[in-house]
Image (cartoon, rainbow, N blue to C red; front, side, top):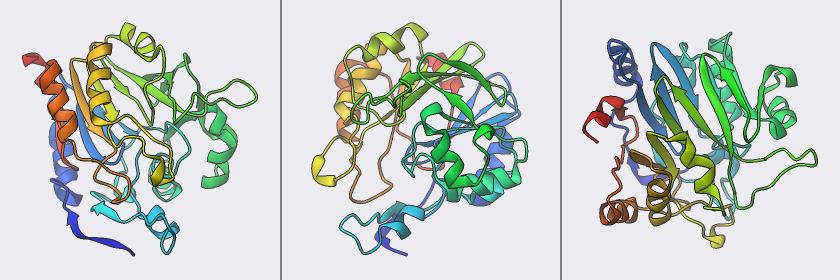
Length: 290
């Protein structure tokens, strides 16, 4: 397997990560989240657990070995998915493998028989084909739809990767999600550029946490693009997010960015932010000082 010469070690991984997840359960007043790399997050709220866009394998490194797009991993996998046998729900924003990875999802489905998996409705056939599950197994989402997913209230919002693409039934191929956690809300953007009217879609939700990609949009990478650090900071400000957390960096050498631009822009415009390390926990108790 291809490896970077300087692999980044997660702050917490394996047993230490599991111990931290268990310890966080004692604080039922707040929600907790852990960055698992790329756009993947584990969210814990009142003893329930939601995985958002988890990528916990080396499937892309293997797939693109020997091609002109080698996916050389920068950060170690924080935990094997078959150790996460307490997950209630998974959301996937779109069908790119780092957001819908069968090598992550199939073990999760095996060790969590009651697992609920939400995907864009437009991705139902692809999801079934990749995992071997029946198409009706999945919870189909679209922009504006609100559904309960494993005890979490989730609403879809449009994402542009790079366009606001839809299928022949007018269903969005790419989504972000608003996740309700009692009186708090998380916006996970999935993969997206800043499209016209985007802030008007999201601002009414009064999100507390905006999780936004920062790797940018460079056609020379031969992959669809995202917000860059400056745009992510400004979008967080435009939607009134109480705190912004960047993602989609430090996973693959060819498609990453330093968070320094994001940090500098947040500081310049007065947008509260937190840059996590892979495996690090953030808790909503931090919002009490924002």
